[in-house]
Amino acid sequence: MQSIKITNAMVELLKKKKINDKILLLVTDDGGGKYSLQGGACSIGSKFSIVVVDQMDDGYQVKVENNADLNLYTSEYDLHFLNKGLTMDFKNYLISLKDNTGMLDGAVLIANGQEILDAFEQGTIASGESC
Image (cartoon, rainbow, N blue to C red):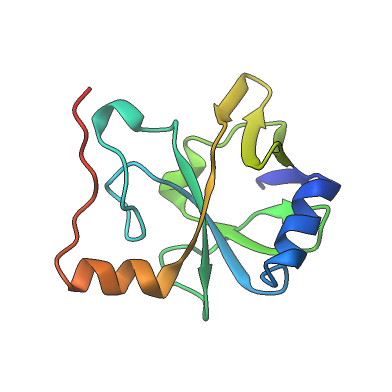
């Protein structure tokens, strides 16, 4: 089972944004996922987002155990990029995600899942910046 340490600073940020009691998805923002507006081949496994959703999503059923009692989930696909020792922190106005191998993303985004889906429906596509 995947687990993550959420620092006190990160918990306070989530409380300030009033999303600490919402359903949160930890996703790899690589341009290929349902909620991904960023990325491309060179960003696979190096960009992540926390997506706030109103209800459970069948594609994101993997519970991520955490010390902050958050309703945090991910997908089987995203698990490939989440290793042991995961820690999420908020410092200097940036959210970082690290594991035992080092920094995974120093600028994790928080996004509204419905707004992302609406953007896709309006024709917005993932930012496919070239490597």
